[in-house]
Structures are given as structure tokens and as C-alpha cells.
Image (cartoon, rainbow, N blue to C red; front, side, top):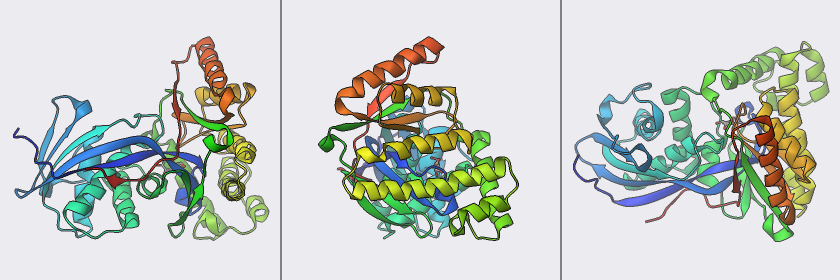
Length: 369
Ligand code: GLA
């Protein structure tokens, strides 16, 4: 393969969702922040209509395909995300020729921190710049979402893509998924002597296995039963819950309705400068996902329970669930003790050793070279 023609380098972060889980596809509220970890893409245009892909992590394995031949399901693994962006842009009517794309990412894979959205977003931004498409960040987020929903086949919402493209350093991003309007909320843990610790449980994170799609289908069914376009349009939560049959459907709806309320409370607390005060809502969010939405697992519950017992102010699973990471809000001087306690309880239960990251609200996608 001839050397890649590089015209620039772009970076897009993963995300940690502070709160607002499984609310995005219900037109609800989310509050993500960008990770310091990014996917970087070195990109150049090609005049011959070919897409060539390589990745630092894929060794000598590379892809060389005609852009015109790209179709949903055509590629799997990491290459599907950059390739899917070219497909989605062309499908949306943009005049995109070929490209050389070299990927390098330090967003942990399988940790529930949106490594795949970071890949799609970085490529979407790079092609938008190079091909002068003039798309807004929201339009690029929709393109990146179509990569997941239509090219790869996972019916995700807009949380990850909007976070990667729209977050700013030092802030969480309060997003209303109904109209995709958002505002940046100062989120400075360090400044008030706190830390947001990410605990990657290394447990399997399997959105493609159907648990995610099944939850989404339940929400749509409930909205139909309640006669509203989406669960966001429910204005009397108690009446809506009473109108649904007791059991999993009602419980799932209760998670979504209460989670939206928790996001609003957390945003209000952060705006009032009360970072410490968000702890109980983080923990309540976890309980709701464990008991009502049933998307937790032993590793996630152990990480949350141990972190709280070791003094964390609040803790919850982040992302789609069924594995991945937990966030724990701790006093700065308790952070190491919390991590050690989680490490020990994982070892005692025979779980794979967890990994830890510090979460500092970082910048959204950008050109870096
Ligand atoms: C995954 C999806 C998002 C969102 C979260 C749950 O990360 O990609 O769209 O639904 O799960 O909040």
C-alpha cells in the first residue's frame, strides 16, 4: 500500500455521562462530559474514489475499498465506524470522494466510554472540514449516529455523538434530546476538592446482544400505550405509571421518568455550585438502573456498593449497562482508598481486576494539526 496522503489531524473524545442514562432515545435529558482520551484521525482526500483505512491498533491489517461499494454490514470491527461515516455522508447527499484515514485512539474500548462514537465523530469532522461540507456539529452527530443505527445496526440515541462533538473543557453538557439544544454547565470537581473516578469493571459490554434494543422497544411500546409520541411527553408520571401493567414495562418507564428528573436536579445543583450535592442522585440513578431498568450486573453493583462503603459521595454505572464502567464521586483525599477498596472486593470475588481513570471534563472534537 502506498503511503497515506495526510492533509490534517483531528481528535474526538470519548464521553463519561454524569447522569441521564437511557433517556436520550426517549427524547429526554442527558448530562455528559468529554474524556481527556481521544480518537485521532490523520486524513487526506483521494481523487480515485477509494477509502483506505489503517489503525495503530490493527497492526498491518488495513482496508482498501471503493467508496461507492460501501453498504450497511459491508465491514465489521473498528473499520465499520470510519467507513460508515463515508457511507452516511454520501447517503445524505454529500459529494464525498475517497480518503486515506489513519486512526489512533486511546479511548478505552469496551469500557462504556463511547470509543466507537469517538471514531465516527472524528472522521465526520475531518471529512466535513476537508470536503468543505458546511455541516453543523448537530448534523455531524446525526451522521455519526446513522453509522451506529444503520451501518452497524445498534439502535442508539444521540448522547455519545453529541457529547463527542459538542462538549467543552471544564463543563458538562446539558442536552435536551428532543430538539438537540444544549448548554454548558460548569463542572469543576478538582476546584472543590473532589474527584470523579471512572472504574472500568472490564465486564462484558454488549449493546449488540439485544438487551439495549429490547429496552428501547419497551419504551416505544409504553409510549404507544400511553398515547404520547415519546416518554418525554408524559406530564403526569404517577398517572402514567398507574396506567401501565405492573411488571417490567412499568418499571422501565419509571426509570426513564425518574432519570429525567434526576438530570434536572443535578444540573440545578451544579449551576448553584453544589458539586458535592449531586452524589445522592448519582446513587439513585444506579439503583433505578439496577432495579427498574435491570441493566446492571454483579461487577457494576460491586463497584458501586464498595465505592459507597469506602466513602464515595455517589456512584453509578455509565453508558448502556450490562458491563462497562462505574463513576464514583469522591473527596480528593478518599479517591485512592475508594480505588483500593474496589480492587480488593473484585479480587475477593474472583472478578477481572478493574482499571481506573480520572475523569476531567475535556474539549470536544477539533482539528489538532
Ligand atoms: C449507549 C448509547 C447511548 C445511550 C446510552 C445509555 O451509550 O450509545 O445512545 O442510550 O447507551 O444512556
